[in-house]
Image 1 (cartoon, rainbow, N blue to C red):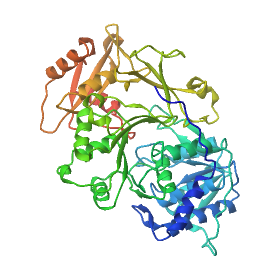
Image 2 (image 1 turned 60 degrees about the vertical axis):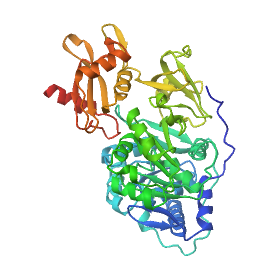
Image 3 (image 1 turned 180 degrees about the horizontal axis):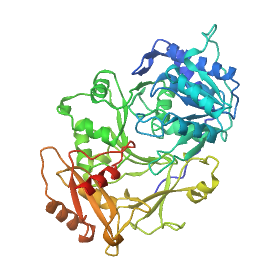
Length: 515
């Protein structure tokens, strides 16, 4: 259902491409953050100073540099680029959440990551210097480089830089850890380069991008920020999602590209008077992370027009599928996650086997792509069942619809047996989201008396709308079957979300028990 994966021909250090753009227009503002705005010359100085500080600390190719800074700031980018200039791998240890930096990892977990990755240099900014010294005392063989305390440059000159082999380790990424301890994902420079090259699609953007990131540039938007600067653009960095700040950036600061988690998209389109706002420079609104209600997505199309794109991806695979702006004009497609990118091969296979299913039958989503991870760090036992023959088993269940678009059904192991019939909670959730009076919902499996499995649904009605349990039961039964109807419904003013942006089934279940 897609083209074979392509090969990246670029082996030149992507940071050098960024620095060249910074030299061409030194007065241009290239980093706007909640802390400060930096011109091209100022930001170039930050990167060069960081690279020289790491060099003095003994960083060499094949070393690993850990980065711990305040969220979404120039220092975070400068430390990453400095490490990559020297051919070293980089791991960000502030948080493991791709959607929010609000919950910082505890010191014990950061120390564990330092040991697990073998990082012997930790780059910190001023506010994190105390934590850096605490980690050094805990870990032992660790050099702390204080980015804010590097000596002024006598002569900027050329930055220290080395070439790297495509197979050299570039990044250790942390998975979101929604099911426990985060896994450590290895990516080589070759894969990292391809992620940067493909962040705006198969071709470079025709416009000079101004990217607004409200999620961590250490995780979800890392390569998007890198790609924007490689293209000679600007990054606008917010410390989390604050609606007034986002609206100001979209209407007044020339933002062309925006990445949002689905809950962020909901907040924007539900804002009173949003339909009167104008976004003169906006070219793309990319959203992902969780299943989106078709009615809310349709509303987003009304607000933003033909700039919406949905992304289905993972830490291990990068982007896998997209629902394009044109696709968003077809209501029937809004419950899907689109079709594979041109460089991605995708098959739906019988779980636990290498055999593709037939037609629209459900199975496990498996992908092969030039952006796949190189494996898990020091854990081949974990990587073995996940990657086989160059194909990644995502653990997601899905099926092709009649149009050749991918519909997700949930995760392997999330299937609930109701009276002997296998039911995917995500299937029921998707149908409930199609009800015109439902703003959001979560459907999850439970075990009742006698260990009997069942379904519960938490529902958030649309503002000013009311729907009854009986109406929703009939809605599900008519579109699926009586076996798919949840055993009980609870009503919420707002569905509680975990730090990853997904419904918090623990809170949902606890309130249900308390009723």
